[in-house]
Length: 173
Image 1: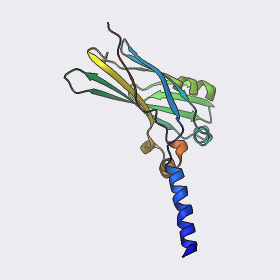
Image 2: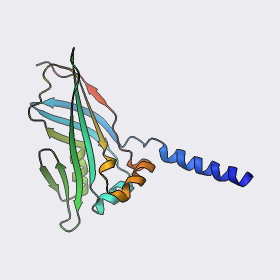
Image 3: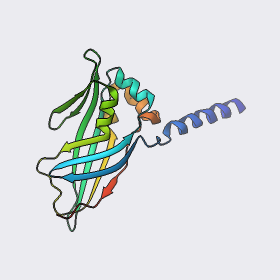
Image 4: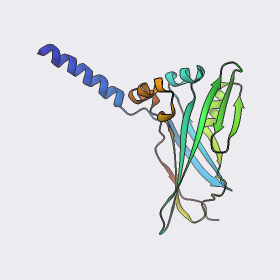
């Protein structure tokens, strides 16, 4: 009986450690919406596991969600999908905006990570006019990871990359 209590205690400690929130993988510093382009500046410190997966050709899919609240109306929500990838044969990193199919290539991982930290997304047809408050969030879309990584991504805090909401008031103009 005593042995089982010890085993259960160890299992619960492991489970709680796996479910602990990740240390802020994304810390949003600023955001703006100018002329239909969303600019988000952040600090991103991905874990070594995540960087290793990227360097082995695993695509990192992110969802950028912009919400615009308007007085007296329901909020408008726009979701954009961004992928960070590495192509080992060409030794190129790539940041891809899925919705507009634009890509930017980088020769070094540091440059690709810097681009992710200074994200610029065109939002055609959306200018935020009349919005009383804007919010943005960046999160890893763990459901889009390859099947073999989905369970580890749920259990390991290194894969819990979510900035939380960053809110700001739009400029009067």
